Length: 255
Image (cartoon, rainbow, N blue to C red; front, side):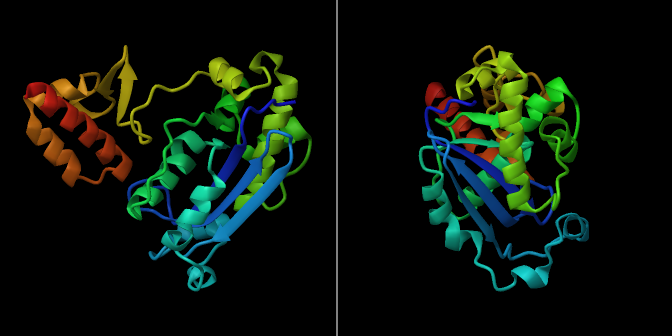
């Protein structure tokens, strides 16, 4: 049984598409598991204020008509922030998609949400490390049940929690705490959620493009126009926030 030091919020999003910088949430479900094992569920349909792509609509079944009268993320952002207060976060492929996109939504409405002091448990990472399969297959493999209603946010979030519990039972090496899970599967040393920058030996380095592997601060000192290019480019807001933090720090050191 997973031993929690603080609540764990399992998040699943359905969205207009898969671009972290431009797509929006159309459905959010959060299963909050308290330290005593009790659960609370929050689910909301949201008006993304942009069209839902046909590919995404066919995947999750949510249409523009279904969300036209739903609240926007800005209208529910404080409620979601409060629900996630003092929680570690988990999900399926959440470190690469759900959490980065949620971060973008908070930044877009100007609401500060601190991800730095939260442990992030990506159940897909455990699964891929051990078995290499999809959410539906994971549910069948670990829970011996068929996932009915897959790609509904609440169904997927609840299934993810059940899978995590089953993984704790199946793999004793994971331990029974969030900290032990992170130690076992590895904690990605990322700077921004889109992984345009990562940490190597305690230094932020670019993880893409012509400067891949080079110190971000070193590049910004030598080519300050590279900062301008990224800030004007189609990069997620969280990437730009972190880049600006490094840029400002670099300027202070130069001064």
